[in-house]
Image 1: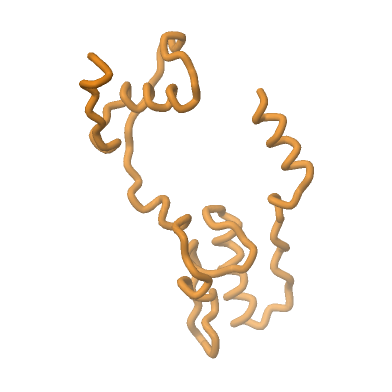
Image 2: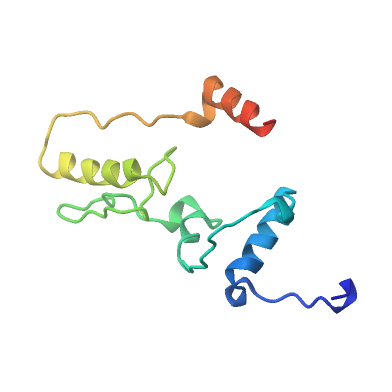
Length: 130
C-alpha cells in the first residue's frame, strides 16, 4: 500500500493487529520484533468521562449543603485535591457521608498527594529514560 493510499479509520473499526501497529508507532517500537501478541479491542465509552474538563461546580459535594439525609457516593462527587478513578476516592466519599450523618467522630484518611512527592517524581523520571 502506498502512503498516499492510506485512509485512516476510527479506532472503533480497527482490529487488534491495527491497534497494536498504531501503539507500536506511537511508542517507536519496531513491530517486526514482536513475535506474538494478543490485542483484543474493547470499548469502554464512559471511562474517560471522569477526566473531561469541568468546573468545581459540575459535580455535587458528597453531602450537598443543607442536606439532612441525602448523600452521594461515587466517582462523580467533588472531593477537593483528590484524584478520581481510585478506590480510595469512592471509599472517602462514602466515609464522609456515613461519618457526618451518624455523627461518628473519626478522621477521614488523609489524601496522599503523590503529585507532590519527590520520591514519586524521581521514580517517574527514571522510568521515562529506560
